[in-house]
Amino acid sequence: TIVLDAGTGLRPLGERMLAEGRTEATVLLSHLHWDHIQGLPFFLPAWLGGHRLTFAGMPGLREALDAQMQPPCFPVRLSDMSAALEFREIDALRLGDVTVRAAKLNHPGGVLGYRIEHAGTSVVYATDTEHYSCPDPHLVALAKDADVLIYDAMYTEAEYAGRVGPSKVGWGHSTWEAGVAVADAASVGRLVLFRHDPQRSDDAIDALEREAATRRPGTVAAREGAELVLRAGGEGRRAA
Image 1: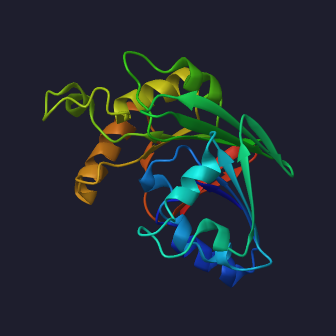
Image 2: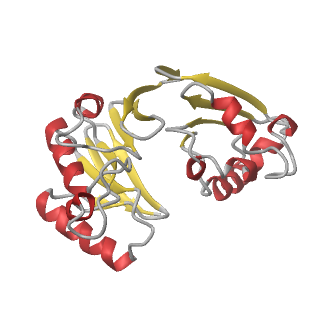
């Protein structure tokens, strides 16, 4: 079980892991801003003996996770968790027959993008990253020929440039248009728009999905509960 970031979705994932009898997981943390780590205190497997959890990411990982669980912010500490916890800085990682590679992307305080490869398939996760004037060459290299690219599409180009509302340049997020450019430059199979603006309605996201799919057929917007099923030699999709 490989988990990307530790936001509030970690709580229902923990309940599902317990129901399915899964006792091990590796959590790949893109960065340590609170919206990416605040699910950890509510992750039930972390509180149970007999479970083993590995957290991988940038330097200072354990200290940051420990800091958010200090009184008066939280009543119990990271050290009170009963699961076996391991913390690793990551450049490359081997998990059985799964290979994970990381690359530094653009976000205030730093962020890591991840490429996960297994059985001839590959997924790239690029959240909280800014594109600036051209596709990030580090991300293009990481995503080269990937089956799926999950990309930060928080804004439209008009919103990012300040033609609609205040400029978002320097805020550390990207646009669906930049996602299309990265996917094209890297010859990605399918683009998944992710990290939606919390002020955008579902109907508005549906409209962006349609527009993006016109520009790049097969592009979809990430949805809660959606599943992408990857098969060597061809990618399929079904809804959970």
